[in-house]
Image (cartoon, rainbow, N blue to C red; front, side):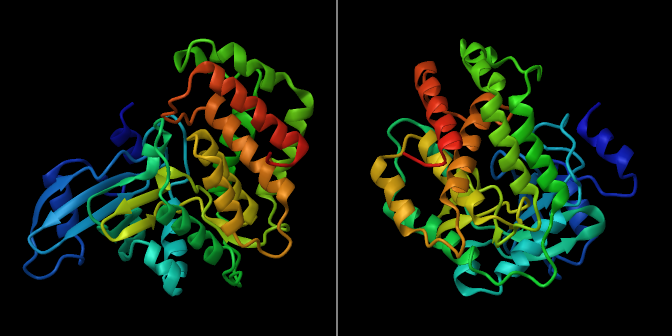
Length: 344
């Protein structure tokens, strides 16, 4: 079943956005978002999105970004996903726009079409996400490192909203693919299709009862609302870090919720480790991060280790330029972080 048919069967009254100029024109003409004499001239894909359909729209006056959520993951339509996640993203951005520092890192929302699950956003301009750091020899600049930590330092200290930002449906989706599915003994993944020998190497972590018990405990903390302390981004990795002419931006907060700050910083450390950043960069990140009250280093280490393992042996693969021996060594390191509760 193609994506459009799947979408419309579940949402028959919605407008389905497509990578087609006439379709985008028709949709925008049905809204009040365009100015009186504004005309849509061209469209283009701004990059490879994972969760949502995203298109850049060029008009005779400006450049815009349209984003629509579907009842599945855009890159993996066989994986169901909450269609109302776009509401969570809109709410998250609206909250950050109240704060000057965080506003600088966040694209501005120009319109929200709730019935059709569509966000209209400012176009931050041509740029690239920071996924290039997975390539051997690529290192984060000091400016980008500082920016990534500045964002977290301010985000994790925001006042907790009176109405808790739960976003539980997205958390449950994330929980399945971080803490559960990668560690099932028979999950039908053949990792040799990713890299020969990886399937056998991964078996150790699917059969380790002590390790899996710890991962289950960390997963329960991830889902717990009683332990929530900070507003977090929820998907803080290089694909969510965008470098444009105006500087570093942080995008795609559809997984954001009030949870544990240790999750964001743990995921960040995990991706610095997987992209083989220097020890100096990782030490700098840990030194610059201002731990909120009650911050738990063991929890951060556990989240970091789990993120590494799930990226190597789970569905959400990364463009890692590591050979099998390097991945085996990294998986061993990640396992020790989870068990011992410290990043060494």
